[in-house]
Length: 249
Ligand SMILES: [Zn+2]
Image (tube, rainbow, N blue to C red):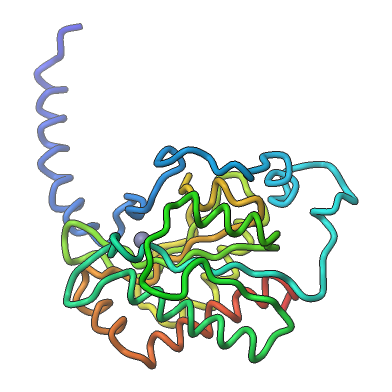
């Protein structure tokens, strides 16, 4: 089809006009966080798709073991990266160290205040594959799983909070939303609750969420993430979000 001059002119015009608008919206980029996708590694041997589906609230099967609520949940906290993988690096800090600090604080708050058993995939600066993390959570029979991360981007403007769940997971979405609603008081930019096929969300047999609490590539977020007070606030917010998810308040 031959393009009319009017159409070509309109396209050029749209292109020119849209450039500044896109630049202004840099802070609301839709790119997903740079975390390991389900295609990164082989599925762990103890991944059980049927159990995952039932626990995620997608199965019609009622009265299964997976759907019975327990008073004292088993929670697995997963500080992302570590060891040979520092995660995102910028503004003088490394993601692996920051998320280990936040997750450890969160565990301490949970065990001090709630009747729950908490396991961490790592408690030091050690190297774990994605399969190691999901194998661990599946072996523990966790009721739910929370992975701690810090975002990054190729430019310095994007900042703020987002949480993720596995696409189609009803309970994962509830967990991600409950975490988000407690965490959001600490941010001026709220990027939303999103779904993504991240490995640790896909291959955990239980509802799972992954939090991206700020951008290491943004000066303000990074400054906050250097503050012990800020990290403690995030840790408590994570714990309170888990409490809402499990106990309903
Ligand atoms: Zn990460």
